[in-house]
Amino acid sequence: VVVNGTYVIFIPDSKDQIEYRICIILSDRYPKQVPVLFCNDPKLPVGNIDRHILSDGSACLGVYTDIMTRWSKHPNIVYFLDNFVAPFLVWQAYYDAHQEPPSWGQRSHFTDGIIEYYAELLGMIKKRSVVYFMKLLARKNRPKGHEMCPCGSGERLRNCHRQLLYSTREKVKWEYVVKDLKAVLNNNMVKQFKK
Image (cartoon, rainbow, N blue to C red):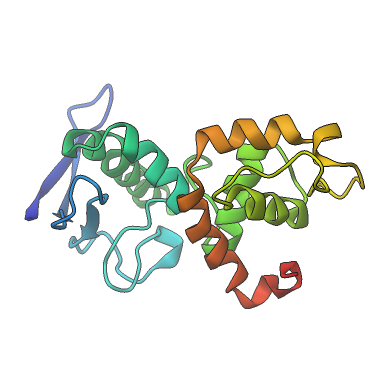
């Protein structure tokens, strides 16, 4: 299904509004697969990564695990419009009005953005530790307490970050993490993280 239309953003405390022409594609796997937002408005510059619009015109809506985790709880088009399309276009409207990105709603591009997401999720700042935790989160079976903790403390998992790891595994599916981890490990900038 292909949906073309105009999305209208109403400016609070004003009669003004901003309109963006967009296209949403729902695959034959909908609702299991998240719809794809395409920007087909001249105000939305295709191929401008700083605007989070890829060269094919599709919108970069975030990190795969974050998107899929939120989508799996509410897999319907209204949720997609309210929680993915609207924030993306409000962000774009701010950029258009101020010629700079807002301080909210943005992560770095590509691998850095993925690592930032997991760092926030885990409450960690060391890139190396985040990637090692991702490796344990991406396992189908839950890691055992006798394994070494990926934080680098030299402690066993049961004496260190076991509860953090287990509680995080309850928030995100390992299958989603696998995709993000592959993206991180395939990036030339993070080859040092590979074992």
